[in-house]
Structure formats: structure tokens, C-alpha cells
Length: 145
Length: 159
Image (cartoon, rainbow over all chains, first blue to last red; front, top):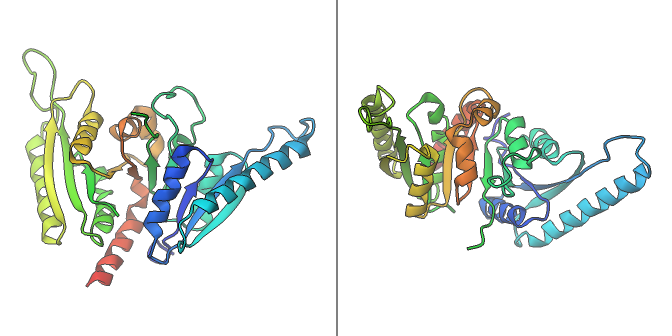
């Protein structure tokens, strides 16, 4: 099993402008090649099972992610083959897990202001780089000139 | 889809891990490859301007050889050796070249076994992610074997 047989590209999507740029990038990479790209949206779950209204939180989180995936699907150019995945849990874990299951040859993620909030933990692109051994394309934040 | 790809290399074996990816991306579309090497020099009144790496000449020879090899494989490759921005570091040199050239991708390898070491140590690649204005492809060292396989198959497909 190697990337010779699998040319899947996995994209993380959270609705941000950087995620949209990442999506466009991935679509362009696979366009006309007959390859597949997979859009992943993560549905964050409440930290503790005992959290009040746990199920409501979960449902809300999942329906939001479903909307994100629909939004993402609407941006994919016609003729490009794609699939969507909705995974519970932290975004970086979700992206890396999907990449592993699909044996993706590449992960594409938007970096949201990595530069400016360097000290803040929990940047998804940062985490993905930590968690995976696959090549990662990081799309820089959209800069307002 | 890429018109110009920058391959950032310091001449190390770790940096070479990204090369198969550069080839695989550049070959099918005839992209221009700019091999970018930043020479870090010492700062200071006496030793100022002296390259930090004692084997800098060997490194340059190696990289020039790689550029020539790319050329002989039919890839439009050129070498840019930059330096001087030692205060900010190599990542800034590379980003400056990328901006000047209007590159649409920078390819760089991580060092070590996982990205973790590099991230914690603040490597050049890590800094690149912060300062780059175009997408950056980070190639982990462990991905190398797979890429090599993909590379040979794409060559076979082209042949």
C-alpha cells in the first residue's frame, strides 16, 4: 500500500477563509486527474460526559459541522470528485485519522493566523503537523493588503 | 498547477527528503523549480560574514549538483543562493526569494523523526509557516520512502 495506488488528498474545513482557500487548492490539485479529495469537518464534543445537556451540545455541534460540509460541497467545482467526512472530536485528530484511514498522500489545511497567535495553544495546523507523518500543505492566512 | 516551486534546502540529508515531492509536482506540468539555499553567516566585527557551516563549499557543490540533475531530468531548475538576513534567519531569506519570484509553493522538509522536534526547536521550516505568503508543503522525513515510490511510478508513467 503506497501513494502509488492512492492519490487521495484530505482537506480540513471549518468555514474560515483559509479553509476555503485550502479547499480550492485541493480541488485544483485533483481536478482532471480522476483522483479524490476528502473534506473533513470535525464536530467538537463536550469535554465531559456529565456535562449538562450533553446530547444537545453534541447535536448542535454535529449539525453545525454538517452545514459546514454542505457549504464546502457547494464550493467544489463541477466535475471534481470529492467525499465528505464528519468526525467527532478535535479537528486535528479528525483530519489525521481520516488521512490514515484513507492512506492519503497529502493533507491540506488553512492556517489561521498562526503567526500572530503563536503562543496560543490549539492551532489546528500546528497539531496536524505534530500528529502526522504525511506531507502537509499549509495555506497561509489571507492577508488584507 | 504550480508555475514556480521553491525548494528550500540547507544541503542536509533531511532536506533531500523533499526533493522527490518537488520532482513529482514539477514534472507533469513543467513548473519552474527554484532551489533556494540560504547561507547563514556569523555576525560580529571579526568573523562577520563567515558562513556558519564549515563545509559551506561542499554544501553548495552538492546543491549545484542537484540542480544540474533536475535539469538533466527535463525540469527547468535554477539555483538561488541567498544570505545575509542572518538576524531574521533562513526562513525570511526563503520567503523573500519566494515573494520576488512570485512562487506559488514552497517545499521544505522537517528535520528529525517527527515534526515535533522541529516545531519545538523553532526550525527554519517552522518559521516558514509563520512568515510565508504562499502555501508551504511540509514533507516529513518518514514520508520519504512513499514519495520515492510515487516518484518512480510517475517517471514510469511519463516514459
